[in-house]
Image (cartoon, rainbow, N blue to C red; front, side, top):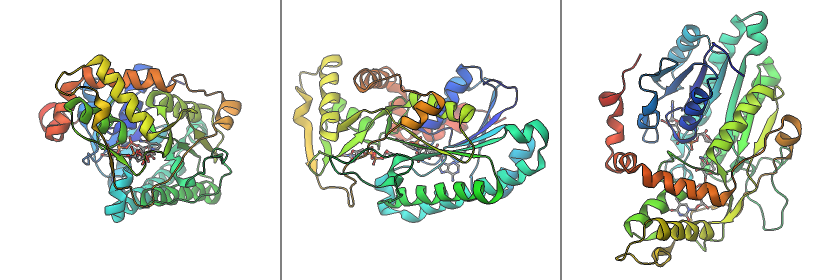
Length: 358
Ligand code: NAD
Ligand code: TDX
């Protein structure tokens, strides 16, 4: 799935987007143009290894900016748009829902509209080959009881948080663009990701870094909520597979069949850290676990049925949870400079200090 024609990746300086861009370049799949606003969640340090990479172009900008998006599409003539950019943190959506609707709904609408206008100027093979891939979440399906079957592509939408509702809205717009205009869309709905470059507001890196410092580890509610964890590079490979082989207008669930209770995730991280980085002053890190007030509207359980993507286009995850979480802890321990920049806020200076916009 290699071409000299670039792909346009939105949100490529965030957690999953940066893993995807690095993987795309590593696999020599072709050039990448990254469009990212660099909100608090965007970190150009994630793409530091591409600083002098001629196949990568970074553009700082907003997916809601119609003129910018239109001019980028005309200038770079991408063969695909892979859309990661979003406000992604559920807790923040509870305190500031407006920003989530603005970026996730209006931003996606603008990207769809500009991409459709661009696609309509294409002809022949280029028009046939063009794809708009929208990266979404399993949270659009709502919550599961302990014995409910996992989410399939047929599960009705029932988003519970403002974040999930805004992602559901964007998914519906993508669906409508295919149905109404024949625009060549693909949507992926993935479960919780973990791995390198995840911003430490999300459970795994937050607990990891607090445990490293001997700080209390906040576990919401009773700690029995279940998430279905997927190693980020498996997600990237899933997106790549859908881009290459997915059927236009369809949606694909992506998940690793790694359901874990939050409390078990937290104790696993504590145990790995005790082994890799023992500390006499901290002692057993499990002692740091602190139950705190629950998240309002906290979904109890997510689980993905990934039968469709496996059967129809042949994707399966490679990394099960135990080796994946160990590799993740090792990555954070080996990248304490990245951690330091994130903690101090210095990562925000990356553009000015280290990265030349081309
Ligand atoms: P993230 O918060 O780490 O990164 C989001 C990126 O988007 C950041 O680089 C940010 O600067 C950029 N961005 C935000 N608003 C923008 C705007 N208006 N214009 C341009 N760029 C903007 O998010 P993530 O965890 O990497 O998630 C990426 C995508 O995958 C999101 O769409 C999210 O809904 C989806 N997703 C995430 C998970 C997960 O577990 N993290 C699971 C399933 C789906
Ligand atoms: O401090 C915490 N303590 C805690 O118990 C945090 C930050 C979270 N939690 C719980 C809440 C969830 O049950 O851990 C679980 C995971 O929380 P998050 O990391 O915030 O992820 P989640 O809310 O499940 O959403 C994530 O997965 C789906 C991503 O943030 C979304 O972008 C993605 O769509």
